[in-house]
Image 1 (cartoon, rainbow, N blue to C red):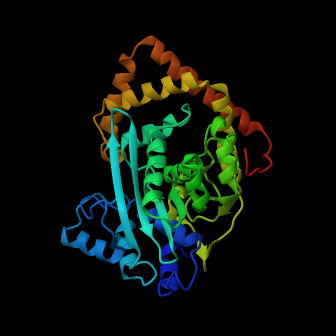
Image 2 (cartoon, helix red, strand yellow; image 1 turned 180 degrees about the vertical axis):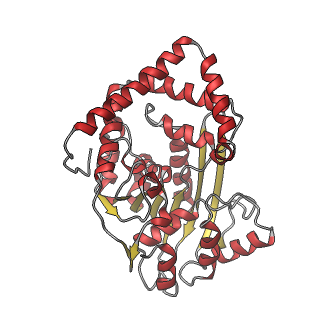
Image 3 (cartoon, helix red, strand yellow; image 1 turned 120 degrees about the vertical axis):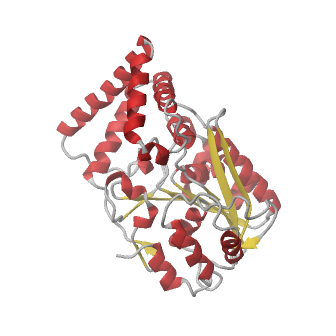
Amino acid sequence: MANIFDYIDWRGDLLISDNKFNEIDNLILSRLAYFPFDGLLDNEEEITIEECYKRYLERKKIGRILQKEDEDLFPALSKSNRFSKLKITQYINKLEFESEKQFSAITIIMPDNTIYVAYRGTDNTVIGWKEDFNMSFSEYVPSQIDAVEYLEKIAKKYKSAIRVGGHSKGGNLAIYASTFCNEKIRKRIIDVYNNDGPGFCDKVVESKEYQDILNRVHTYIPQTSIIGRLLNHREETTILKSTQTGIMQHDLYSWQVINTKFVREELTYSSEFIDNTITDWLKEIKPAQREKFIDIFFEILNTTGVETLSEFSSNKFTNALTMLKTYKNIDDESKEIMLKTLNAFFTIAKSNIRMNKPKINFRK
């Protein structure tokens, strides 16, 4: 089995200008958006990945690495002929509790006269996950608006053709920004890459702008995808093989590659079951009730004082007790909303278990 590290070994000596950009290059650049660039470059500065990694080492690795594999990917890219001389610029990173927004993006200047705008997916902050949950009842969330503004700003500065991409929520932002940016900018977009990112509400997928960008969208999901099948999708989807199981397949380091492509696979029954259950649940629970349920849940979670999911995991027993005590003390109306919403989900899940294996459908 091979992943993106093997790809860098295979193709790392081949320049993008000589060996054209492909779907694995897209995945690597979408992961680049997760790297801790804070304090390493000024907004208008253009520096190579190689130079950026040198600064990272000189400043004693400041910044939070979100996944342990990133510690190996950063130097691997800095030593690779294919990636080391790519220039990065226009890094932005926002975390705003009041507006419930987590947004980060970076632009990569490519040697084939294009730019790749990479949006970061959900990090491990509680506020980042709250914003993701908000997608289940909101027409848009704050980071989607920022994604449009960022793309339009970049497109004004750089007049080349544009690729846009991201992993997880970053893939959702890539599609949303490409859909609702200025029409002249939209015409310059040649590819949009969604790597296991969630979909959208009905209003978005039924819009003229969404239909206009649809034939340029490339969506990739692992065979037991959960995140990448949430909400509505209309684009063609490529199913790929992951070596992980369940929701851990969302980890792009587990995605299998061969040469310049992902190893193709078929959706599993468990992915279909979860997707059907969540879809039916969203139909059953009105947006207003979803909003109340999510607000109450995160209000209880916030009583633990944690700001990241890793903090919760490190002391989960104590945090769970705090949440349980908080739940006991919330008002009866809030308890009723929580119970009704959860009961509806489990009732639908039991019903779907009894059903025969559903026919696989790549679109909703």
